[in-house]
Length: 217
Length: 250
Picture 1 (cartoon, rainbow over the protein chains, first blue to last red):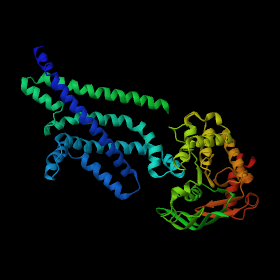
Picture 2 (picture 1 turned 45 degrees about the vertical axis):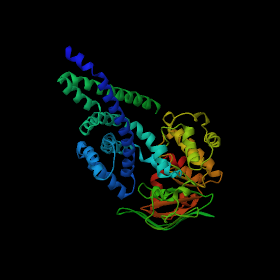
Picture 3 (picture 1 turned 180 degrees about the horizontal axis):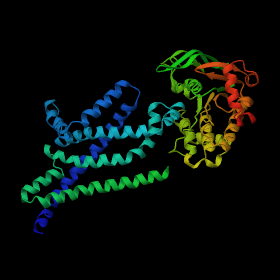
Picture 4 (picture 1 turned 90 degrees about the horizontal axis):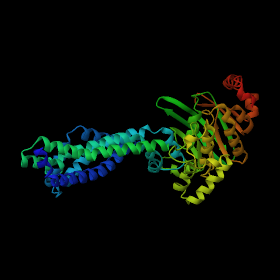
């Protein structure tokens, strides 16, 4: 029990790390959703050039390690003469990586909406973006929600990588606490529990939302 | 006044030659029924009129717009053309009223109240004003198709296109849709209708067009077409479809 008391005495540090993890996840989520929508539209539009760009983006970012992408922004930005904080670099890296997966989730969702919906919308005079915004995407959301939640949960877990570029997130604080106390097992178990406090409500909320959306249609 | 003019129009899907040298003129107020065996190109012909399919060759002019010109603002023309699909294609996430008002509000930029008034007017016209707040999934097929017609009409179009509007319906619901279409035809709407409903063609069409293998094989008044077709293929088609029973009785 002694170890647990030591662990709990660091709860302030844990909470500050949890706060950073939440902050990074939130920004990366918003950014990756935006990237995902754009990439998905690139992939389903009729322009061959945009198709190719979208496909290349997805292939590149899905098939290279996240840590390299994060390092690219962290070590690459000073080389390019940019002065961006580690937190911003990490958020950016996490967002472009997750954005590739979001893009695939959105694309699958958009393509699952029957073709006649786009035809009906376009034949009433809507342009492509109006048809997407008013007709296709609202229907795609229902299809997208479960895999989207998976990606969100993955992203929260992946954010632990940012500890390697000195972002003081939950993982980073956990390392510090562990080297401070020489306790490993309990320190990391407690960190895992804290990650669960983000991910479990996330998937629970998504499940509820999904059930409500199913009922309304 | 000619609203739709096909001039030596050809279309290929890859190697498949689906429309061959189509010449066709449709005047304002005319009701043209297109019939023919499946795969004859009749749906493609219809879908070219609002460029859901682009033509490969020739000239196609609709309401003064050149559809063979890629610079034509197609969204502007499509506001003037209502389309009714075989599978209705109502927006399942929107109520009946929202289905009908969406394009008037977003495309024609009409105020919401006015759009809803217009929608209610057309819902009454198609006989289901009480369904305004229902979702499409709560309606029968016949009701859904009538909503789809109201949705097309709410844009106050110059032309209405019907792509096999009764083919996906249970038999007992076909008439409620055809009745709405007949009323529309009597009011002088320009209509192009792809259908297998020979009774409708006979009663309502100003002109019947028979297509086979991508070509317009025969065209004429319903009297001419149903009683005395010249072409062998048209005779064969009629003999097959009319001995089917239900179509000939109506």
